[in-house]
Image (cartoon, rainbow, N blue to C red; front, side, top):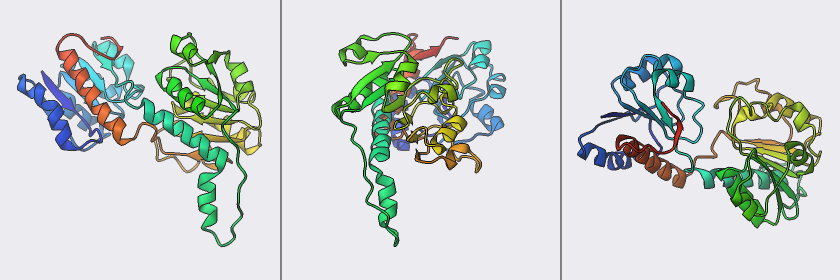
Length: 319
């Protein structure tokens, strides 16, 4: 089979070739493109002869997929796959897999880190102490004893819950189905309205789909305590970010830690969250740790191997 990796995976190029070598030894052709492109024409040129296309978080639009005649499998080295046009893949009989699980620890740790910054004004204090007109010190809050609401108790949500629990927080959760692991952690599952109204910290860990887009709209966000903070390290459009900005600026929510947006950074100059009070914004780096990148590459090549051998893994959409 012909395999094309269309973009870098943030590991050394030598590691890419090391992971690809067993496939080459088995007679498969592997092509690696070490520079990312968003040009649809170039994406098509890179993928047109490939049976298996490997990508990361680079958009792979319908206008490319619709022209593919040989591709049977799009292997996404990322947890989310909403940047791949799934309808076009279904129409062309192309299966999609993801690399679920590679960044579980990295994303959970960022959720905790954003909370610590909001509660203890770490970045604010760092900036302030460097000024001539020093305004501090800033009195903060402790996570210990607070109620943390985990919106989505999948792998990352549960890992985040473990970290908050280690800090002495009470954990409640919202999920469409009950999981034994959540019960084992002592997570009390409640409905979304109850979670939002009870929590001191709301941490979002849902996938983005038709049901979750703007799930946290103005009506839902208005249920939160004025002293509460919200963390989003999942997908930006799950929250109505314009409504969140208004509530933050009116003091109806105490703070927000946001790593994901309605589009990928750089953000437009008029993006509403850029004007939000008490908002810490990071440029979609939740997944981005040395350890996560190494594991992601391994999972991606395992997915390719499994597909070739006829027992595909991590399939998120059948052909």
